[in-house]
Length: 317
Image (tube, rainbow, N blue to C red):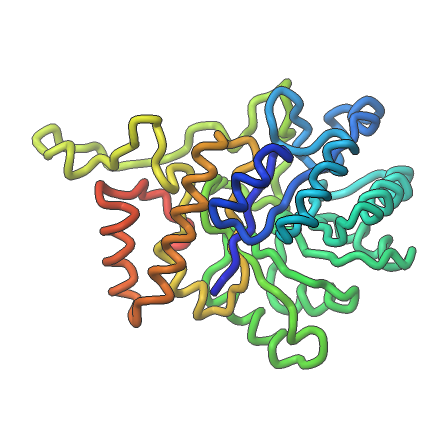
């Protein structure tokens, strides 16, 4: 079964999300010393937000989280998603990573190619996940970076099933450690109109995010239509699974393409909504395991997860 990789905005969410069914997590870590020194224009993680829980901001929080990981055995991958850094920042990042590794955080999601090279040249023995923010173009891109021993490739949002399958087949037939490469695809939330590698928005408290600018287009509904039949139903708390982007109906084809992990975006989301997302994705995976055809899978999905209609904001359709 494909594993659920959920976004974590605070150590307080960890146990709750584990109990909901998450298999692993990704989270940013931006020490306040970095924020104080570089502000928001030279970010460590492109999520320089302090007014709500988007990432970890204190080493003590990492220490608490590391104890939870030892008990529950669900790993957390730390993200360094900036597309580039200035030269003086690379040794500072290495120092941050080395301190995190002492606590047991061994895997890092990285978007800057130069940082991957720098870590390998310095002999840092961490696992590296190619970030979806790097925007791999094709299997040749992945082949180049596999010289630097990637543990996982995270596909960006704009990939087709055929593109992902081509990359995965190439790695599986390469042999050696490359054949063991993991592959992750987006599955819920934040269907951003941008490819991360080409996004220049600053994600901070001071400015609105460009991806929050309204851009959905929909046909004008005929007033004579039955509203109950055309408008998906939010629950009493304002929750609708996949309201900001959904790939649940694509799980059948994602599995066939060779995807091993599913990225459930949610840093900064309401904790209650994120928990429901995890439970719904877990249910969808159980349905997938117990149906033989894509049509049967979609039928059961509609019955169990979307009885009143889905958001229609589909990643892969």
